[in-house]
Amino acid sequence: MNYLKPSETLSELFAGLVVVLTVTLAASVLGGGDEAGATTALIGAIGANTAWGIIDASLYVMNATFDRKRQLRFVHVIAASPDEATALDQIRGELDPILESVTKAGDRDQLYRSIYSTLAHGEFPARSGLQRDDIVGAIQMFCIALCATLPAAIPLLLSSHPMQALRISNFLVVGLLFIVGYYWAKYVDVNRWFAGLGLMSLGLILVGVAIALGG
Image 1 (cartoon, one colour):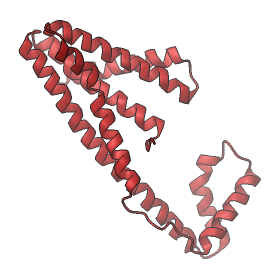
Image 2: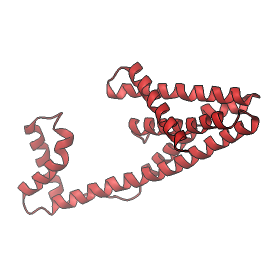
Image 3: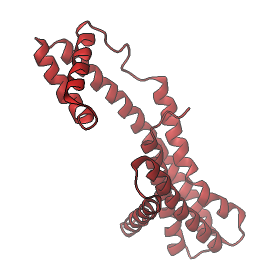
């Protein structure tokens, strides 16, 4: 079971590939293509994405907990409202930006009254703190970041020609950036080739910026 949203999975994979490409391209340019440079690139890519995965996993847990705490606070605000009209205004302010484009005003009003009726009787979420799903989602986030190193790691481990291995690694990572964009288009209803080329171009631009700034 996937505990991450498609946007979270694809964003994490995209970020991991950008980090890997930054390390391996920098090694290609600055390392001279010798065996030591290839080894440094491999260790650097794994280390950078391991750190990135830990950071993003921690942020995932923080954000999940924050969202539940915020939802619980909203529930308490509704329950403590002095009258139904005030509570409905609070609910509209929270949910209209999400539902307005896909629902009719009358349907939203009926839904909001139903929400108020439920919350006014004190039917609050049972838990708002850290949950098992948060931990599993964080682990998945970490694994995605770490898996992004595989296209770089495999050629460097298998080839006896360091410069050739680095070039193959870079080519594979660039290709995967295109694939991530191509797959992303499935969720945002745009041309898949356009999305693939666009995300690949964005990744290369970000890599260039990172290298230029000493990343």
